Structure formats: structure tokens, C-alpha cells
Image: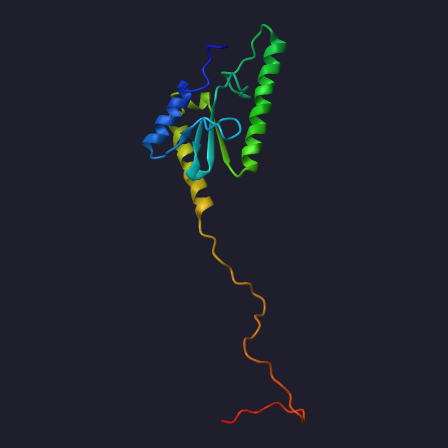
Length: 163
């Protein structure tokens, strides 16, 4: 397993090249954030994880199959990876970051373009939601008057103004 790369994988490079060409700027593997996300877009407060279907146990994916040898080891390892991924994304969400996971199978040539366009759309939507102007709504309650209240004088009558 020492030969398995965690950085600059082929699926990650596909996402990086697309985002860069589309004008999105990012940082790689930020060590200050939990989980060291593959891509960090600070302007969008978004972390992108590009996960391999096998190593992260992509449920329902045809590219994920549990090995038939040493089953207990692999089940425990993949389960730990899934738990760690979930905890890291929860910690990022508590810090105010959006998390997007792109799976390796979503970057196969048949669906790659759709996945990447969907990713760009999602990033733009996040940006617009986070940076939209919140209009101030005036409450409908009775506003107090700035003038002095009417005063009653010695005989119980209101003061009359002369016209």
C-alpha cells in the first residue's frame, strides 16, 4: 500500500484541470483544515474531496468490490476510512465550510463532462447564496411617534393650536 498515492491522482488532476480552466482558483491539500481536503476554494468556503471508489467504499458503485482474501482486514480498513471521512466533513461543516465529494466513478469518460459542469454549477450557487444581499425587512408593528405626546392642562382640555 505504500505505492498508493494520495496526492496528484488521475481523478484529482481531471478535476483540477477543469476547475482551473473554468476560472476557479484553489489551494491543494491544506494542512490547516481537518482531513487535508484535496482542493480548497477559500473564496467559496468549499472543500472538495476526490475519493477513489475502492478506498473509500463507494456504496452502490460497480467499481467497488470487497476483496475476497483477508476480508476482515479490508472490511475494517474501508469502514474506518468511511467513518473518518464522515467525521472530517462534519468538523468542516461546523467550521462553516461546504464539502463536496467527487467519486472516481463520476469521472469516467461517459459521465465526466456532466459531473464537472455540475460541480461548477454547485460552486457558483454556493458563492451566490453566501454572498447575496439580505434585504432588510421593516417590521409591520406600530412605530412610536417622534413628536411629543398630547398633554392635558389644568381644566382637562387639550391644547388647541391657532390657525
